[in-house]
Every structure is written in structure tokens, then in C-alpha cells.
Image 1 (cartoon, rainbow, N blue to C red):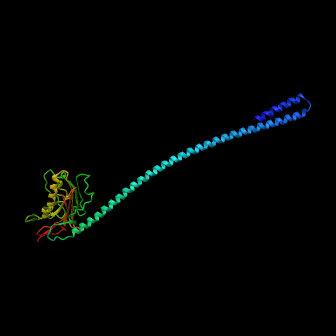
Image 2 (cartoon, one colour):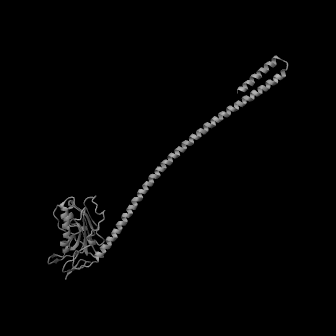
Image 3 (cartoon, helix red, strand yellow):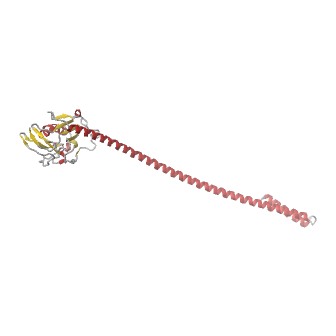
Length: 314
């Protein structure tokens, strides 16, 4: 720009001199034209340079703007990826937790199934035993078959009675006994007739009793069809009563005493009268109560038809 101005001044000076001195006017005019041309060319170069500079500035602004947009997009994508990663991590942890629970449930089911198979085998073996003069015998060396979960007291005292089977027979009765379950009212007369109930008079009273699986003195259950079976007088008393009295005395001694208790009638095939019962008891926190026995459902001097409940005197 500065050079163009100098050329322009020289051109003007040459024109003035040419007009004042007519001598060599043509050379001055020629010099002035050349100077003007150079000035014009220099001005054009300057203009182009300015335009190029502005374009560069604009390009820089565009590039800067594009770079800024790209950075914002990258930041946004990074944030989204971070959120997705957090979500996936949370879902992964949730799935792992669910998988752990599923594995635990499967393990518990397998354990329970194994225990059920073992109990079924034990019950089948008991059902096939033959009475040989001793009415009460030990099972599993007198060790009750309760798991640590069976012995838990977190629920407090409770009692449950299995549903009648497809022959209308009683099934197992379970309880966590405590003093608070024991009855405070007088016992009512029984009127439920369990399967195989064909009673008859004997010299010592009656052949059969309506036997409570869990004795009335322990839970107060009376006319509960799920807790009554056809049992001989000797099965009910003295054989079952011996164990029931021991448990009752222990419970009465303290309201903090608990006993896990289970009574299972043992049937053979489709017979309506049980061959016997299995009684299990375990005091919580001690071995004050500790037994696992099988009592034959027999009566001296009588032959019982277990299929129907009828009997004949020997």
C-alpha cells in the first residue's frame, strides 16, 4: 500500500513537470502512465491481499467453529458413552445378583429334593419293617433328621399339618413348639373318623384311638382331620405319650424353650391304616430333648388288616 502511494505521487509529479516543460513532454507522459499503471497494479495487489487475508480469517473462524462443534459432539458422545457404561455396569451387577439367587435357589431345591428322596427311602424301609416284639425302636441311632434351617427360630413358634393324600390319609405334622402354643382350655370330644376307622371293644377298653400326630397338650389341636390317624391304644398310650410328656415338661419349664418336632405316619402302599409312626424331636440350643424313633401300630392279642382297618382276635 505504501509503495503504491509513492508511485502515485511520482506519477502526479511527472505529469505536472510535463505540462510545465513542453520539452520532452512525451517522455514525461510515458513515465506518468507507467507510474500510474504500477500504482494501479500495486493497489490491486494490496486489495487481493486484503481479500485473501479476510478469507483466511473467515476460514479460520469456520474451522474454529467446526472444531468447537466437533469438540461439543465429542464431549456429548463421551457423556453418553459414560452413561451407557454406567447403565451396563448396573445391569451387569443386577444380572450377577439374580444369577447368584438362582444358583442359591437351585442348590436349596437340590438339597431339599435330596432330603426328600432320603426321607422317602427311610419311610419305605420303615414301612417294610416287621414287628418282632419291641414296639418302639430307634431310627438313625436316635438322631433326628433336621437341617440347620429346620431348627431356625426366626419365625418364632409355629405348627403346620400336611394335606390329606389321595387316599384321604394323614401326612406329616411339623412344629416348632413353645410354651405359648400349649392349650389353656379344656379338651373337646373327638368326632373325626380317620381312614381305616373300624373300632371294637377289647378287654382293656378299645382297640383304636383317634391318635393325634402332635399331641393335644403340645398345640391344642383337637378335631383337626390333618392331625388325627387310626392308631392302637398301645401306640397312643403309653408309647407316644412317653415322648409327648417329656417335651411338654421341657416346654413348661421356660417360655424361652423351643423344640423342633415332627411326626410322620408310615403307610405301606395303599393301606388305610399306618404300619407305624416316626417321631422326631430336638430342643433348640441343647440336647435336653433329642430323639428319632419308630413306633409300630400294633396291639397285643389282635391281628390288624392294615388295608381296611378291620381286625381279628388271635
